[in-house]
Length: 581
Image (cartoon, rainbow, N blue to C red; front, side, top):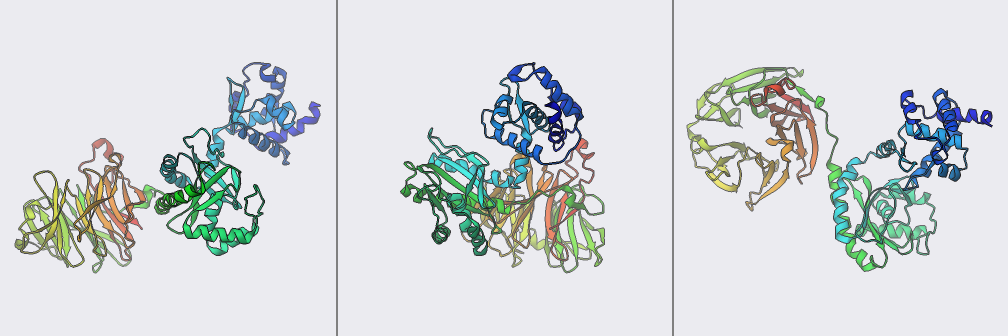
C-alpha cells in the first residue's frame, strides 16, 4: 500500500516546495505520538517523504491541497487531521503530507493546544493582493462604521468579480439577530443590492454584456428572473442612486446598497446595509437609500483622488549650492528661469534653464537683512526684509521701495492676485494674524482675521479664493473674498509635519511642503488628499509650479534647522529640488 501511494506523495509536495528544509523540519515536529490519531510511525514516514520529495507533475495533488484549504477555510473553529481525513476521504498519510507542506508555506497554521488547523496568515496576504483595493477598504472603513451606527445593522463592502460580487469587508450590526455573510463570500449580481448597484453605475455597453451572460437563477420566489425586468430595475436604481434587495437572495433578509464610483468614473464596488426584513421594512429602505448613496459618494471621492505615494526618487536635486533656508520660489515664464531666496544668508538666487534643459545657478543679488517675503512685480521683485522693502531688478540691481514701506515692518506672508494687487498677512499682538490688500503708497486694507499666524498666501487661478497655510495647527485655510468667511480646507496631523508654502497647478491642485515631514502634498479643491511625494530631506520649505510646459514642481528646502545627526542622512538639505508633475 505504501508503495502504491509513494508517487502521489512526491506530486503532493512538489507544487508547494518548502523554501528552507530546516523550516519544514521544524514544522514537522509533532507534539506527541498518538495525539489526534497521529502515530510516531506515520509521522516518520511523512517527515522522510516530505524532506526527500522531488518535483513531479500532474494536478491531482494541487486539487487535494486546494480541497484542504477550502475545508479549513470553511470551518471557523478549525479542523483536526482526523476530521480532514474523514471529510475529504483521503488517506491519512496524504493528509499528513499536505498539511505539513501547507503549514511550511504559511497557508495553514496549527493550533497546538486544540490540535486543529486554521488558515495561515499567508492566505490573508494573498487575498489582499488579489484585489489591489487596499485604498477602497481603508476609505470605506469610517463610512461603514457610520452606517452601522446609524442603522444598527450590518454593513458590507463588495466589489465585482466576473459575474458575481465578492465581499471585501464587513462591519457587524448591534443586534444579536443580524446578517452575517462571510468575508470572501460570492453572490450573484441579479439578486443582491450590491450587484444591482454596481451594474446600475456601469456604462450601457458594459452592463449589457454582463446582463447577457448572467444566469438568472431563482433563489427565492422574489428573485428577478426576467432580463427585461432586471434592466428596468437597473434603470430605476441608476436614477435614484441606490439598489434594493427585497428578499431576493434569502427570504426574510432585505438589503439596500449604492455603487462606489471614483473620480475617473470607474465603478470600484458597492456599500450596503442588510438585516432582517421585519426591521428593514420597505419604507425604511427608501429612507436609508439616500444616506447610503451619499456615503458611497464620499468613499468614491476619497479613493478616486488618492494616488500612490511617489517614492523619494521621483524628486531630483537640482545641481547647485545649498541654502541655509530656501524659500519664495517663483517661475519666470518669459525668461525661462526660477528666482528664489536664501532667507538666512539673505540673497536672491536665480536658476536659468537653457532650451536644451541645462540649468545654471547664480546669485542675483545679496540683501542686507533676513528676507521675510518676496513677490514678482513684472520683471522686478518686491523683497520684504527685516530692515524694510526693496525692489530687485532683473539685472540684479537693488533699490529701496519707499512707496511700499507703510505696513512692511509686520509683513509675514505676501502674494498677488490676478489683477496684480498685493495681499499680505500681518501678525497681531494677540497671536493671530490679519490678512488684507496692500497697494502702493497706501495703508493695507483688512479683510480677514485669522486666529493663528499665517505662513504663506496664494490665490486660486480664477481669483475666487485665497489660500493660506497656518503651520501651528497644520491647516490650509480657504478665505472667501465675497463673504469674508474662513474655512478649513485640510489639516495635516502634527506628526506628519507643518505645511509651508503654497502652489496651485494647472489642474487646480494645491501643493504644500511639509517641514519636518520629509514630503510634499497635493490636495484637491475639495480638500481631498491627492498625492504624497517623499523627499530626501526633512525640511522642504516652499513650492512653485514652473518649467517651460508648466509641468515641474520646484521645491526649496532648509538646512539650518536640521539636527547634525539627521544631516548625515539628509546631506541634500538646503538644496533646490524638482518634481515632474
